[in-house]
Length: 522
Image (cartoon, rainbow, N blue to C red; front, side, top):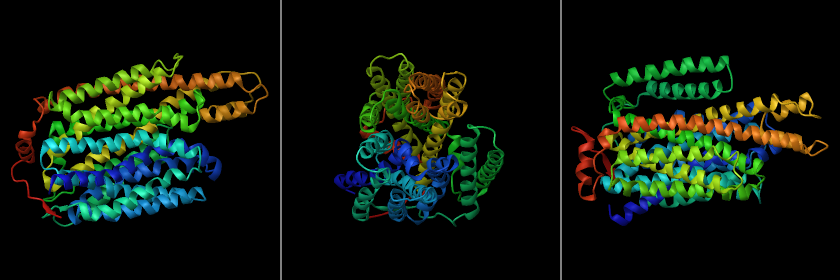
């Protein structure tokens, strides 16, 4: 494949990745308008927000394995129109039930797209030096898309209805379907063995059960979550045992005996976990505490997006002068610095503090995530590229789902506790209970009070930033432990970075002896 065609193929491959990451974060800024229009119950709203991540995380391993068997290009061309159609249904939903169904279809379509894009990069760029740059661009689309979601959503909501945030997907999917058949090569495992239906069911049930349980438990004790956790854990345990016994497993669990592979996956999970937690709080902080409009709030998130893009593009070049482990550790240190800066938002008198914190967080995530994907792909034989990519992407989605749920619940527990524990004149029990649910509800209650609710508004804003402070401290601790993991677990990546002249040798050696040749067609 010529140089021009390789990089053109990469440009096509990042399109669906960009959309999927935008869809992970764009809904947050549209929730107030969506809730006012469709009036979902609290349970329905949770399903609208969470179902996409549930299915995306739960189906990635299954879809990655299908891509290895029927062809990664083929499954991309199946999933893209499904994702586009689901976006149209979501945009024009007229009831909570219709939107829930659309989000489920989006999760299904997204699960077909993610592992195949990363798996095809392994095929298109056999040279490790080029592949590091390609993965940096891929990671830029993922990290930048998650940060761009609230920005684009805010601009659209200034002029259109809430459903417009889903219409972003349609022209991009149409462009992808028009170009991808001609530019992308087909690649698959030449000897995949029979498709293992029990393994597919076990992985899907296990992941969805565990994600549902964890997202529910952080909100309180729940019997259904306990049952889901037991079923999910049992299914995943059975899945792992089955994979170890099969001659052609769906997922090579032996990859996790490679400490660098395992460490890279964990670092990805933690990076996305903290990033999505931040994106839960920052839009609300800007629009409600600082009083900015949705478009202006979106623009203030631009430094985070720009820094994430810069970090992901900078990482492979830094790795050629230092080492993969050094660059990842620098990223984690910068990430910790961003959370330290975020602790000063409560007392800040200027938005400069917010901008500094955002840039440090974006840069840290960009540097930490990018090269871990290269470690993951390099550790996997080419014939298992999509399956290894699915492990990486499952980590992404698991981290994203947990980041919003766990960190969001921690912060909102602080908020709710402070609002409930403070008696304010003129605030009845019903109004106090409503104000303690969300910051938006507190501002709405304040607007209906005779004195404008000045005291309630100030109390709610203080409680919200106190919750953000605690979340920042939690993230500092988690990122510090991850830094230790990177230092110990990525020792194999501690040498000098891969030079372009050494890239082919390094890539071939990483595949290991006996790796099967992968079938590739144009």
